[in-house]
Length: 551
RNA sequence: UGGGGUGUAGCCAAGCGGUAAGGCAACGGGUUUUGAUCCCGUCAUGCGAAGGUUCGAUUCCUUCCACCCCAGCCA
Image (cartoon, rainbow, N blue to C red; front, side, top):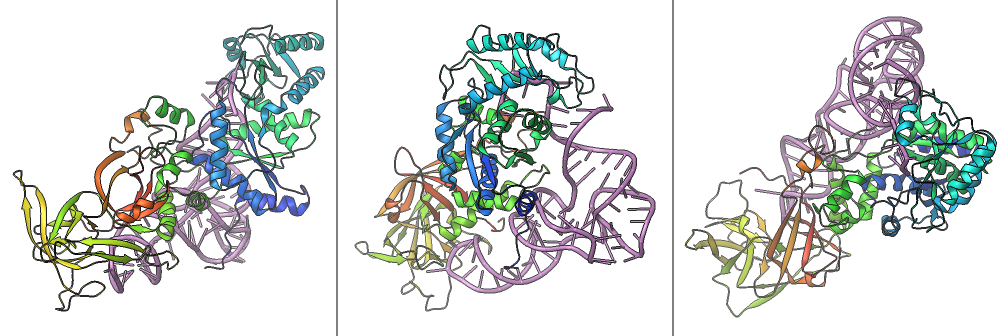
């Protein structure tokens, strides 16, 4: 099993063959985000695919911003995207590329098509254009401007570029086939007028190329061999090829499509994620509940776990719905192996050890990981008064309850076995203090009288601990497919996606935690120190698996 | 009803004419000073359906069915 090869996915098979056949001498891929939002888990799949392919086949992967629409894009997104790619552990070949840096060439190529009678300036309004386009089942009609002379088209195009016309008044279209069953071939738009500044090119342009007119040509200019995009662009491939065939491009790239990631209980629509941010359903793009890479990072997910997840889900042409439990498995698996352990009491109640001297304290040495001796042990203070979790004590319980019960014993993790004696309550009947006794000589060994403890609970010394705030996160949506169906996705927001717990008691060693460093709070889950504000806030990355029986 | 895709277990996914890998989840059991981890076991006579070709079909052919994408001057 361990020496079995992981089967190649369909793209790896194609690339392996292309390289073997000499169709391409070097693999070049690209990750082409539009800087109109933050990268999310779906992008991670594409990043891992494109950069991963380049890694395994000794090729290059470019980072190219698909920045052809100044109305939606911003420099802040450019910066965030670069940071996320680096965080995932990838490095693009050469400089960061921008589709906008090819605007001059693209404009020349637009001229080329006009001169070849393959493009024309169309004066139809957007509404008229829609009517002329036809429908899914009916062919479109030729634009009345379709047969303008080359001279007139050239003149109009130049004037569009000069900014003489209003937005929406004219476009440059390719002359292909208004009757095509593929709507992308019904004289697609190459350039539209946008009197807007661009984050990269400033005021240089007032006409901007469309995705279709920019993408494949950008691939060609960069020498991309395999241009990998998601399934919904399959319909665009004939157009992609049309430009490559009809333009004097330097190189012929080939487009392939794969099924984008769908994750249940999660939304991966940049528009909707932006809405969550803009309308303040979450704190920001990097809110730990967001499925953005920035959000997962702040939540305590590691890049390794996200890459592992992408490896687990595979790459195919079928569109499925991946269970978020797979992502959760990936991060638990990573953190279990790599996160140091510590103790933190979330709902503290005081426990007094009546037979332990008030003036005595001890410091126990506890391993920071149960099966990694490369982790330095930590010191854990102990004294007469400690905190335990309210959920770990009951006055009475059945045999399934493996925690502290009056008259019964439990092991304090890394310390003594204790036996509960009584519970003190307030006027409301709530337990405010538990009284117990230690069983002598039980650190690191079982009680001499042979009465073993029923279980193990975590604790923190009252005289020497940290007061911390815990942010307990759950899934943002309580419906497996918040994005589909009749109801609006906002209706499915989980009201308990964030529960803030103040006054939690953490062991002293956590004082040296670094921002975003992950820990396992034993018996509770994985947490990381938040990376902003006060230094005493820990975000819960994910809880531990819990196979305890319902009591 | 036009064009483009996809159907293998609850989910993801191998399989490429020779008798259904693996992972996640779930469920049993063992170990355990974390109800964690780890270990062992169970989990498709079946590959969307029906025909056909073949000694043999998840793999080839035919027909049908279901689902997804496309009618932005978004990407």
